[in-house]
Amino acid sequence: MNISLTPALEKYVQDKVAQGLYNSASEVIREAIRLLISKETVSKERLDMLNRDIEIGLNDMKNGNYKDGHKVMKDLISRYE
Image (cartoon, rainbow, N blue to C red; front, side, top):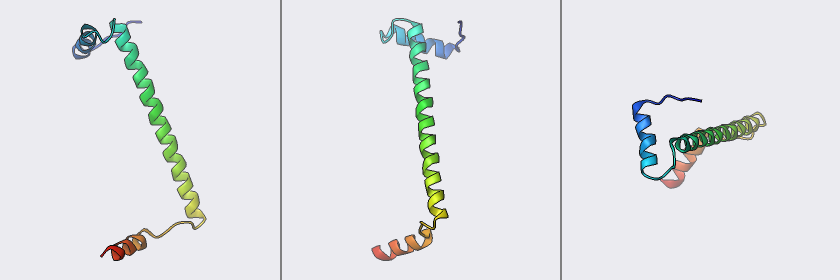
């Protein structure tokens, strides 16, 4: 597989190798891909959690298990005035 990088990205990869952080450009690219996979996994997990929380909230609302936000704020303001 061959890949093309912009001059700025190519310099970045070469700098990492020159700094001794990696033994080759391939190592830098592999690490970048691993990080991308990790980022995508974390993003998906967060989205899944958000969707679960939304579903819980919607189910609570359907069951009448919620509080009026305006009333809650009014009560909090009154309590701390």
